Image (cartoon, rainbow, N blue to C red; front, side):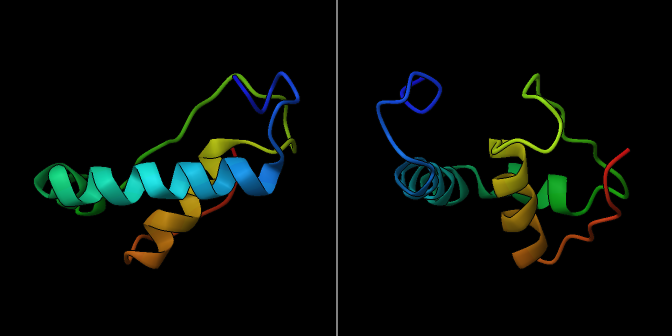
Length: 73
């Protein structure tokens, strides 16, 4: 909510979010592996289309870990 309330920038949010996802990957690797080995997943959020959103950050992480990106629906 700090980003949505204007208390932190996109860059600050991104650094915080990436740190949280790195920690999640370390502590929940079997779950991450399960997600990465699933044929199709869909990331959803209530953020407006084409706005800064954590789902795009997560998409980038999943692609870096070997996932495929097929675009927006």
